[in-house]
Length: 250
Image 1: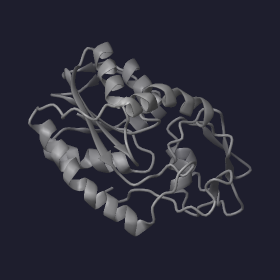
Image 2 (image 1 turned 30 degrees about the vertical axis):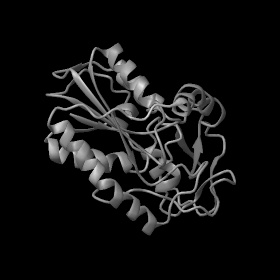
Image 3 (image 1 turned 180 degrees about the vertical axis):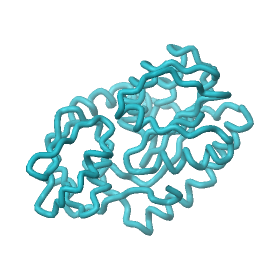
């Protein structure tokens, strides 16, 4: 089984390619998390978690969902993490999660994909995004072949910087930056409700035809990057920045 969580489509794209090679069922963790669905899952053969990198680890809401969900039919777990730059020492925490769940840890693969975190960074323009995805394809396919063959991923870099980012910077990232307070919809908003539909934490409601953000946010950027009229901003940090979403193969 290939399970993915995505904000703007990168992980879904990777998961689709892996599932095509392995023949595994494809499951959206977005849907499971949004519906508070932690019913037992039958995962025939293997577990492949495809996720973005949040603060140099897998997203907390994904880890929490995995912790709360019982899986049957598989005892080996692979992690494929897409990022705009690097995943730090995320492998340490993925291995720990596997130990807690009783899975055989089969490694973590890093896939660099276009940046989407416009609350802090610059997303690429369309042509540059296509180039980054094209460069990632051989790595995605190699990861898929490794999983299909039942082999473990090669060990990832693990230096002092990586350990500091995943160990020290990660909790600071959530404490200092992961807030919904700065999101707002300007006068371009047409009240379509897409942001409400896409929010995996049901954190967005509508008032007087405009979206309103609550306190429970994971900074997946789905709302701001999928808005069809680009009416959503994140304070002043997103103004003028291109929105990114991976529509290739989706």
